[in-house]
Image (cartoon, rainbow, N blue to C red; front, side, top):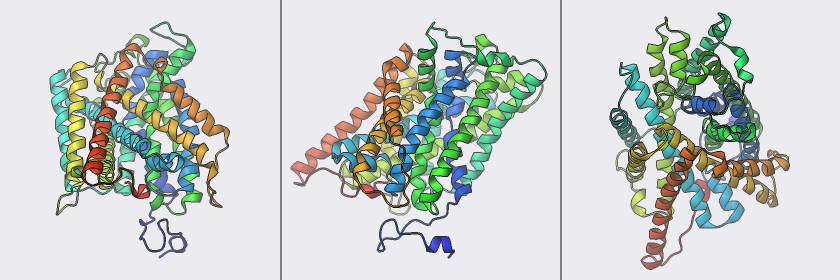
Length: 481
């Protein structure tokens, strides 16, 4: 055992074995960067560029600023309470109201399901294009997306442990795909076919002012910045987290936003102004159009859809793993029906929780595909951002409330003004003024998913009270996941 590992304090006390601390700064940085890059930039770049024109890089920058302010709150809380239960843990310690804790935990579950559903549609469209179907029908894309979700369920049932080294490989694939887009943008600009001057031009198709247009575009862009909060679940596996975590998380956010801004600039430079808001295939995203338009004589466009598939598939799997494990954890603590906490005898995978989350995802994809006025990817990615903005608002408030608890000697402490700014900004981006009329479906989707959770909580409460004569609440919030 190394000196570093030997001197690490036990997170759960001397009687409980901790997770193995395998993450140094380099592996943790790659994990965070890979988690943020995910499906977001593929899904939303075209739509936000369509809202603000050439300054498409600006919403990414603003979203980064809001995410970074919130990251300071997460850093204070994760170094103060170094367990892997995340937002639910902080909410419970701050307010101590079991139902509020449940709502936050179930909101995180719903965000995982909507994010995975976004990825499944994005993957389906790119996979079909990769195999030569340049204009797949809605039905074909829907069926492919549903089949992909079933495959994820099968993998999840078999039992999958997250491998950080495998995540490194996937991160390299993701960065390679985005490097291709950025490289094409540089090449097009260099040969004189790209108009770099457009990156300072503001254009709003709805004649909105700069502030409101950027607000709407930032709410869209936020979907591409929401991965960083998953890294708090790795705190128990990080070497010397009090020292490493703050520096690495902020560095990872910085790297991701630079990549996003360069991608946005490449899109603006390569794609003609009138075509950015209307990609060839709205579900596949605008980046494929950049490859086809910028390098028409190279076979990169044949490879790029498969790189996109590879990049977003892992995001979807991690989302569904997280969602099913949270459902299982809540069932084990009797805040959801116990039937959702059953496991397969051999594999020990939570099969009822996996079945529940998969059915929710299948139903969500089907309903949104058939009913949404906007594209499926836009509706689901926006709902994911909406749900997580709500969680981030509460985390920023919890950070301020928990200042009443003593702070460990080496714990990170954010400047007091940052959680205040974070709560205000995240709360502001939750409002209907930050969305187009077609995006109001996001509130219906989020409300419908949370209503399912509330019904299940009520059924569990009635069963616990009437059959088991016990209260409904979290018994061990520190180990919810």
